[in-house]
Image 1 (cartoon, rainbow, N blue to C red):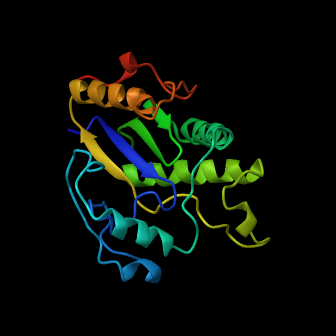
Image 2: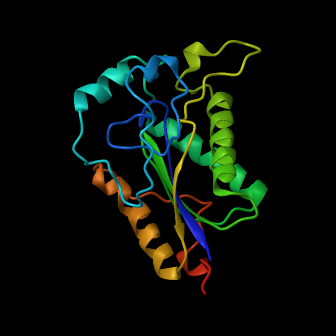
Length: 201
């Protein structure tokens, strides 16, 4: 029985669908990227970030993208957090951990009537609306009145199903400590519930 999810979703251009280390994508939508190979679908539950790979191929693919890769700054991360808070409040999501990093987000989210992919889509959408409202969308120079702006997010998400309280606790600790790996402080968001509120079996 699934009790919660560890979801990871990325800023545009951070992790490509045909990344030589593997990805969670089934196919490559972008014509610019297809020449660098098909999607590298993987179902591993462990990080492949440090897996040996052709770094030059990965960088060449990034250089061929339609837009430059998105890297969120601190002000944008705060806006993303406000957007997340609104989505969490509106849809009554249970969030047990969240770290918003320059190129990706880690969250531990309780089981819900919505699929985790739908939850992540709602979170991304709310965050994007907040970035636009504050005038700090990272692709703001490409926004055309009357048209949808380019999304600052990648299309999919990576998720691990958490089936025991021990799994949830391990994921929460991982997410809480993730900023420290990049030399940043641990984060605190008002929409995150205490781990003691997480479901038990």
